[in-house]
Amino acid sequence: MPRIRSVATAAASAVPAAVNRRTVLAATGAVSLSAGVGFALRPDSAAHAATGHAPAAAQEAPIAVSRQAPAAPLAPYTRGTTLSSVATPRGSSGYRRLGDGPAWKRVVRGELATPHSGRAARRTALAAFVQFTDLHLVDTQHPLRLEFLRSQSASAWRPQETLSVAGAVSLVERVNTLRGAPVTGSPLHFVMTTGDNTDNNSKTELDWFLKVMSGGRITPNSGDPRHYEGVQNSDLKLYWQPDAALRDADKQLGFPRIQGFLEAAIREVRSPGLGLPWYSTVGNHDALPLGCYAHGDSYLTDFATGGKKLMSLPAATSKTLLKAIKDGKDPKGVQFRDMLKAHTRDLRSVTPDERRAPFTPAEYLRAHLDPANTGPGPIGHGYSSANLAANTQYYTFRIAEDVLGISLDTTDPGGHYAGSIGTAQLKWLERTLSENNDSYVIVFSHHTSKSMQNPRTDPAHPRERRHDGAELVALLGNHRNVLAWVNGHTHRNEIVAHQGAGRHPFWEVSTASHVDFPQLARVIELVDNHDGTLSLFTTLIESGAPHRTDYADLTQTGLAALYRELSFNAPGARTDLTGSAVDRNTELVLKKG
View 1 (spheres, rainbow, N blue to C red):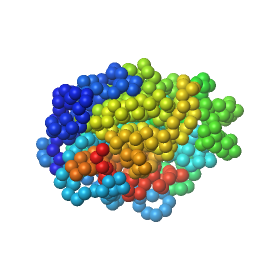
View 2: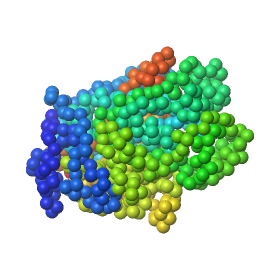
View 3: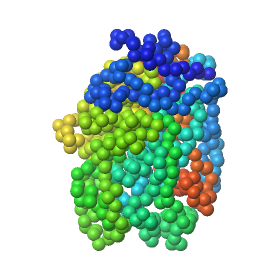
View 4: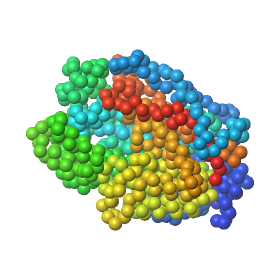
């Protein structure tokens, strides 16, 4: 079993610049995972602000303490993970209930290095953390939502969205019950969210997200504080009307009638907050209104906080608007704005709410830096006041003595949901990797390599070129210290082995969302096998809610269970998001750089 040692901060800080950090750490016995202490650059340091300067050892300081190592000998475990049980549908057709199903086994992948026998007895833990991605906390009553596009795309509105906060809190509760990393039993360092924490770029959603993560009371309601005002009590058959006897389209597919559902859905929820430090990476739904429109249209901003909402639209108009969004032909929302103006007579009255205003990147940073949202730390959750001054949302942080984390901003301020990065960030990443070549590196972003194909110019930097996923893969492959690129966006489990002529291999780990079934997060462990290889273990986890639902149970936990069941049955839900066995619980083997 791995042995957990204390952090050798003094030894690491005293290392001369010319001496390899990893060599000294190994010599002092400090290469293994620290007992739950996370590291980051001090919030106001230039390096942390993404200016391109290397993080010096003297700038590092402990910033938060996670769960301490247990007194009993560390051992692998499966409880609370998909290695134990997975939510599985009952029956073969129609609306299907969920129950406890067989576990997903671990698959060893050796495309990038040969797994050697006996490595389990030799391994030493280097780092362990949890990835959340695509929580999509949804203000379902927000006037700017595109629910009416459901007539053309069933997934444009999902019946489970009203319960996103309860579902996210249940995921936090699951992480808090984990007694460590499943393979090594080591303490978990932190949780990283890889973007799309919010859904509509709304201040209501941002407030809910920060309270879910750091702890607090959340009322997932906006507008009228007493009543729900949205498509689910609209008497429109296009949407599931849970409280009503109306035979809507979803009830015709077997969805239940649950009286009291909407009242329960907007009731106060209490989050215990994570028991671990947590970091934040930005996604397109955090950066852009509706995840696809650039900021700057005053009409759309006023509409977001106003007292009118569009709930239905002729099929032909919906088809045209949907195509424009998918093709990225309306990045500023001009066509969307003109459509709203043309359908003034079709708008329904709702209660205005200034809290629904879109938030800017600066407001996103300030909210993370607000002491009220610090929780278990660190202050800013990766972001700093220097980020705010530089107008950047990318940074570095020390995961463990020998492992550096890099969080990227792959959103495009010019609009559209696909990603890219600007030249300044690309050059900063190149310098950061080069100047930290004696540390292993794990990169985090929202977009995957395949979904970074947006060349649209950043309005704030009109002369700066944007770079796609292929260029980022090539850059990462130029550096032997890069072990993995961890991301989300596609809502699908997928693990890709990147290797090519003249390139250093690394793994790209993409994880499913927590809004669409199968609603997962992922534990990732890095170990040294002491045979010339490293291993990355990935273990998927579900929320803490039971697999079985009870329609009479409208408590916070009962709603979280229903959130999962509704997501499985949602019309238009994709069936490939779980991925195959090689994309789920894995051991990913790498040669040591």
